[in-house]
Amino acid sequence: MHLPLPALRMFEAVARLGSVSQAAQDLGVTQPAVSQQLRQLESALGLALVRREGRGIALTSAGAAYATALTRAFAEIRAATERCRAAAAGGVLTVALVPTLATRWLIPRLAAFHDAHPEIEVRLATAPSVAARPPDDVDVAIRVGGGRWQGCRADLLMPDDSFPVASPDLLAGRPLRVPADLAWHTLLHVEAAPRRQDWPRWLALAGQPRLKPARQLAFGSSAQALDAACHGLGVAVGHRPFVAEDIARGRLVAPFAEVVPGEGAYYLVSRRDLAESPKVRAFRLWLLRTIDPPPA
Image (cartoon, helix red, strand yellow):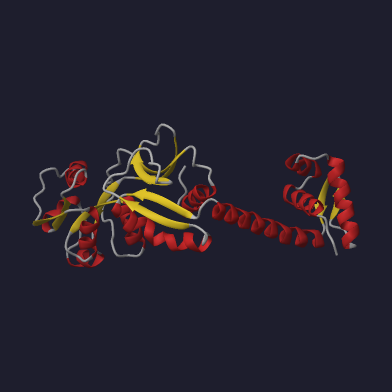
C-alpha cells in the first residue's frame, strides 16, 4: 500500500497539536489541504483516525496508536538526518579545554556522545588555559568567563563555585562538623595560579582566615590534589565540575555548606560562523542535555 508522505506528516501534526488549523499553520499550508489529506489517508487505511467533538477534533483509538508510531518514526528520521549532516561536515570535532576538566568531567561522558553520534570523532585539545576565541583549528572550547566573547556563541554549562571535599573514609575517622575542625586535618593545596587562592578564599568565607592545619601538602594541579583527596591524603578544595562525578559516585563528600561563588561560569564557546555547523550543533545539544539540572 502506498501512503503519501504529505498525508502522514499532516495527520501527525494534527494529532500532536490537536487542531487542523494549528497543524495547517505549523506546516505552512491551508486548512482545506490538511482536511483533504486526512480524508485521503483514512480512505486508504479503511478506518477513521479522527472524529469531530463540538468545534474541535479528537483521535479515535486507532488514530491515537497510529499517531504514536508516526511521531516516533519522524523523530528517528530527524535524528538520522542530523547524523548524515554531521558526517557530511567532516566527522572530526576538536574541543579545547583545560586538562583537569577533560579528565574529571568531559571524558567520563564521551562514551554516551559516541553512542549517540558514532559518525563524529572527538579530538580533545588540552592546555593550561583556553583562548577567549577558539582558533581556526578548534571547533568549540569550554572555558570560564562571563559569557560574552566577541564573535562567539556561548552556552552556559555550570557555575565555577568551589568548596572543600574529602574521602568519606577519611572523615569516618575524624569528622568535619564545623570549619574549625580542619585544624586536625591535612589541607591539600594547588600551587598553580589561580588555584593557589582556593583555600584562603574559602577559609575567609567560613570565618577561619587564620586556621593552622595539622599538615599541608602542595600539588602542581587540581587533578593531582583531587586524586590525593580521593585516596584519603587530606582535604582539598574542589571546583564543582571537577568533583561532580566523584561526589555522585561516593568517592568524595562535601562536608560544609559554605561555597565560594566563582568569578565566572563554564561556557561552551564556538565561533559564530561554526556554531550551527552539524557537528558543533550535535555536540552542543548533547552536552546541554547532560547537564543536570539544565542551565537556566
